[in-house]
Image (cartoon, rainbow, N blue to C red; front, side, top):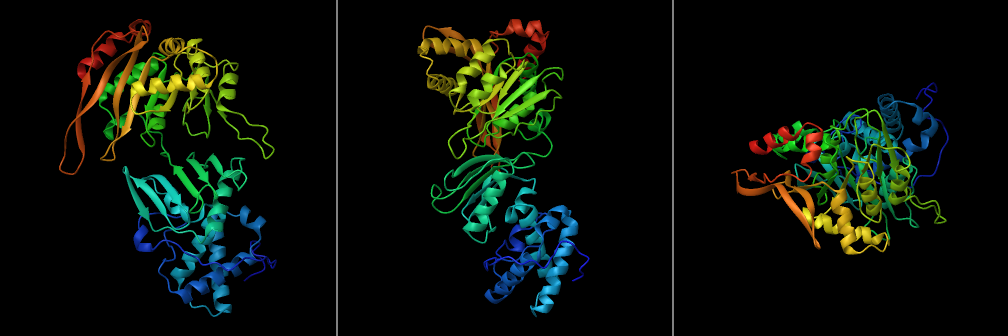
Length: 465
């Protein structure tokens, strides 16, 4: 190979011999890789795999890491292919052009991307990627879980990918700190669990988000809601109602909150608080805050509660909490009750009444010594609307309930289900069919609607359901 190419020097380093194992081409058709779709078939014979492993190690030993990092992916692929071809000729390894390109693609994916996960990350039809050890990878597509024939070489290979993800956002994951929340460059949310907590090998859970933000128009097309409900939720966001989006894992809570946030005025100052930044706000005046885990010495931790308290000192118009899951619930209620109208958060709950119970329990975690009645009064004064979203058995994600907090009577919170989805049947292809029951009781926040001049639009939308 020409000495003029700076990527490959003569320095050598010890790399243990390892097999190159990847998904069969026919099993992952349609999944793009970083630079192409060629992948080395998993059922390749043992002798060929050994030759490929030898070429792989020789190629890695020739590479200058600094020069590799400076090259764009397409140029690096050309250089790696050329090096593989030269090494195959020197070692008398019989690889055709397709196999050489497949090996080069995998090497570049490993160096610049996340190895075998790259084809899955670049496939926009995939919503979730779940890695259960080096040999078991699942995806969610159209609401259905599917196992895909994607493999890592071994535990070490998978662990290196995990540590690269964590390091990219200034976090660490190892035996002393085996759990980590992080994000990828495209905003995808990642959770990592390493052994000894993950018994069968490192575990990665990736929640992908659409490259283009999903708005209400798209949600209507997906069947997540009807146009009148979208109009009601738009009015709720424009009128600066305090909103909680409730639902189970993977039900579409963050997507819903992103869609709601599009109706926030561009002149407002928004402060977001998240464990791993994933919200896609479009406004120009957004301050994004992210929690920080403790250091090796157990110091320096910054919790969501710390950030919510600090956000109150940052002159926000709205505070948006990615997910309320602990003692920060009390500070969230304080923010909603002290002039930060239009604040939003998500919470894990099975229905809207359960969401209120969870908020009460989390406020009690703050050790403020409040009585249950005092907590309920705070919740009723702070929260205007709860939107319940659900991933249903046909894989569809839908708004199933929109509930107003109407007040409190004695120890009981008064709830008004403005909308509630009732499943009425199923299409021949398994798609659920339903209709919304609507309540036209005068809303407790009607004065707010009148203040913004949207009371008639609200009533019209209710009539259209």
